[in-house]
Image (cartoon, rainbow, N blue to C red; front, top):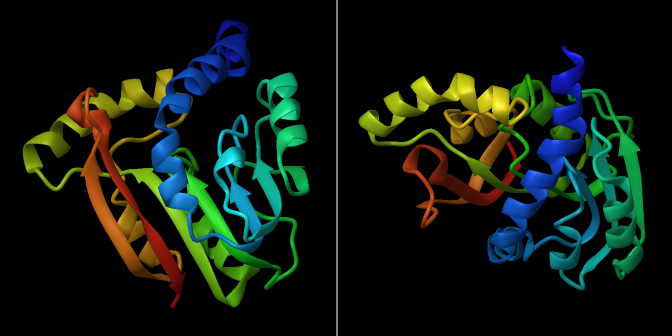
Length: 208
């Protein structure tokens, strides 16, 4: 990795992503509405989910390989109405937590960037309690073959400029392969965004 790209990845991209994703607060609120108890947030980023967790959440434990915008993140953690426990983990998805520790796991625009999302989900399954739930909001491969082909063409540039993010993954299939069943799932498209980047999926999954 070049020094220039490392600077982009550590300082430029996190600020751009934080700016863009702040505009999607309503989607975060919907995705997190049923979380409760002990929550693991995988792919914490800059802490944008914290204001949107409901009162039923007692603690949020975070896991992310990156340490982005630490001052901004610290301010958001300090403002949270519940304890926040921060962990920096390896990008391969291995989690340093005991089996069955969490009531819920939250993933918002995270599986799109994990190199091996199925392995990461199997780790998520391990640390969830038997009746635990996975709450997700992700990019997804379009069901329209024409759009999907354009997603495939665009994806190498997406991965470069968005530091590993993929817009063409079949997230429902990935979640199932990770050991989950889809309890609720909806697809939708973001307004005012190019369709190749605007196809989304949101829902709740349980251990299968």
